[in-house]
Amino acid sequence: MRITRKDFLRLSGFSLLAAGCKQAVRSVTSAARPASKPIRWGMVIDVKKCREKEACDACIHACSTAHNIPQIANRAHEVKWIWTEPYAAVFPSTQTSYVPPSFAKGMVPLLCNHCDDPPCTRVCPTQATWKRDDGTVMMDWHRCIGCRYCIAACPYGSRSFNWEDPRPAIASINPDFPTRTKGVVEKCNFCEERLAQGLKPACVEACPQHAFTFGNLADPDSEPRQLLRERFAVQRQPELGTGPSVYYLV
Amino acid sequence: MRDRVWILAGLAVFVAALTFPAWYGLAHAKASSSPPNLVLPVNQKECVAPAGTMRATHMQLLIQWRQDVTRRGDRRFVAYNGKVYEKSLTRTCLGCHNKAGFCDRCHQYSGVSGPHCWNCHNDPQAVARSAP
Image (cartoon, rainbow over all chains, first blue to last red):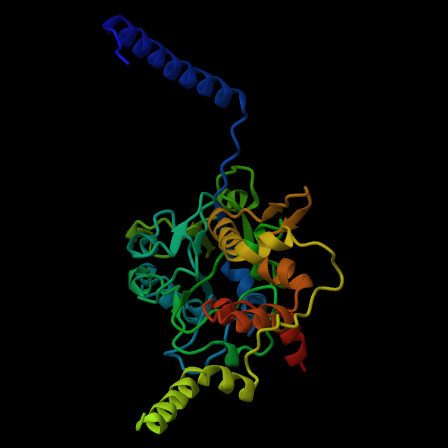
């Protein structure tokens, strides 16, 4: 089949017109659809409220039961999603010589910060960990090869490696949530599986002092945003530029 | 024909060696040509897809569900007949199927030992049994 110059030009013209029309239709339809509200999950922890009840580990216990976290005594092998450490270890750069000793020695609950710019996701060679559109730093345990590069990258120590089979160290298994296996990294998932059901994270619900406030940081009227407007809050090592989404009222 | 004895003896050894797997299988009764005796769900009549489709492509479906849930947070599965299911191995698949009597038995029969699902995922019935 021979094609004349005229036919060729006509065909090209129609093709361009069709492509242009598609763009126009797409822009009109996307403008007509209401833009979905952005979500950025975040948490505010009231350290004072947390300390009102001594030796309380309700949040840690709730998290362990919900997520089948093994209880391993050997500190080199332990697996942590939410845990506590002394104030001085949590906020090393805000230390002065005159912090009230009672405050400096008291414990502060820690969990994954679900950073704006998470260093762990950047180094993962298999994309087994990544940041979701709602800000949750997720893990795909199917995909983790156990290289532990993310553990090295996380400045907050939020990630744990399964050095041994975790199942024998789980007192009672919650069948609704998978356990992990030897050789994968794990961490707090902001209770992604509960958020999908419209529930709040397990630690937030379990706290008898209501020290945890969870909500959408992108919504100026959300509970955490109201708290952050009213009171002074700090993040863990914000100078690292990771943008933690867990705030502490001190 | 002086070597008849040797030839026949050699042939007998050859046939015995050739048919050894069949004799061994019969003697040790681990393998059989009859289909596996599967424990079928009692509370449901239909699966998320027709049985033939599930038999041939359940692995692709499971991988698709896995990607949808972990990567996209999409947990809603609309089946071929319009029914809606949750994309969950533990709750949806094992809600009806018996892992030991269905998954394991058929995989053993087919000689498929590949998937590591149960290294992490739980069998709710086994968990309930082991609970005090």
